[in-house]
Amino acid sequence: MTIVTFASVQRLLLALLFVAAATPLSAAIDPDLTEPSDAGRIHLTDGTVIVGVVTGIRGGKVKVATAFSDDALNIPADMVANFEQIQETHLMLKDESVVTLPAIEVVDGALVLESETIALADIDVMNPEPWERGQGFKWTGDTSAALAVARGNTDTNELDVAINTVLKSTRDRYTLNGSIDMDDTGSADSDVRTDTSDKWKLLGKYDYYLKNDRNYLGFNLAVEADALADIDIRTYVGPYFGRVLLDNDMISLDGELGLAYVSTEYTQPQFDDIQCLDSAGVSRGPKACAFDKKSYGAVNWNLTGESNILGGNSKLYLRHVGIVGTEGTEDVLLKTTAGLSFPLVFGFQAAAEFSIDYDGSLDEEVDQKYSFRVGYAW
Image 1 (cartoon, rainbow, N blue to C red):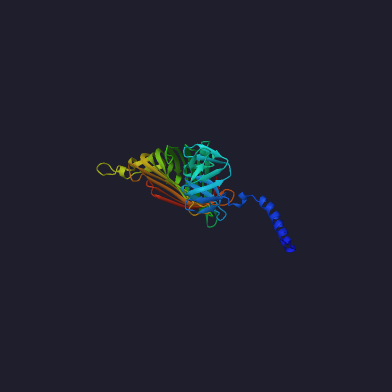
Image 2 (cartoon, rainbow, N blue to C red):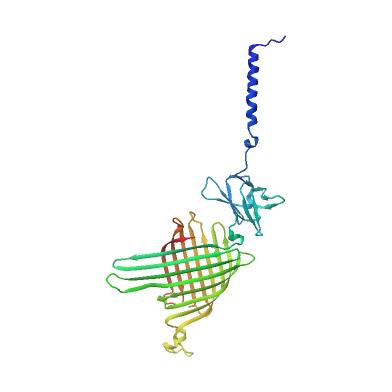
């Protein structure tokens, strides 16, 4: 006969109570929520897992924003194995077609669609801007000024204003650069002023991208004047072939090579020592040597570059123009501007800039200038 004791009944009741309490608790837990989620995790081909958000894909790089760095990570697309992101996204492919997805799922380095997969490396741009989709232009530029007024034993006034702007589409690009530089100095006790700089220049360019958009054909027209160099007006015009030499997250550099026709009109008669001699080597006199206009054919090259290698949203920039005439060594023009710009507030920026110009036709062939500029960029 089985004897039921109070202790055994107590143990049975406790067991029943434990089972009753555990059953609704286990039923309330969603098993999907207890499993690790891949949302917000980017798996790389080497096994690395990065917790972050994919904010962009461009030029074969996947940009990932993370909580541990203010700067986004740029990961080669062929190193990304898996990730998923629930957000409507527009993807432009290499063939310029655009795919719109409610969410992104990448498995084994390929974007998963309903009926096919697309290699991540075949995505050109994530969420392209309207101009990248062939709608209008991207407009960028900056304008700046270097102003100085000094009063003392010597009074100095300086005015240096510049503007650079670019309109770019998927097919072509327009560039406009201009500057004016007017400086003078004088004694504090005299009304007589002496110009130390009085010049201006304007450069316009048009570029048409070829099938390989790293190559393009272009045409430029420049007009400039320099009163202190007796240059009333100088123009040069001509075609060129250009190529994007470097274009990555840290540096961009364009190079161009072409032909130019240069014409210079002077405010004062110029003299050419070679033309002053006849065939016998005898001087023909100053009137035979004087001229107030000169034109020649030339080879023209341009370099334009930018770099953010220093970080902190700062930018190194370079603009160089070279012209070498086909007739004489004095027909050489070299113009170089280099600087470092850094942001201030609300789109304003400051820049430390150095420029050097060489003109083989002048007595003072080299003109250098250092300036600190403040301006606005867009």
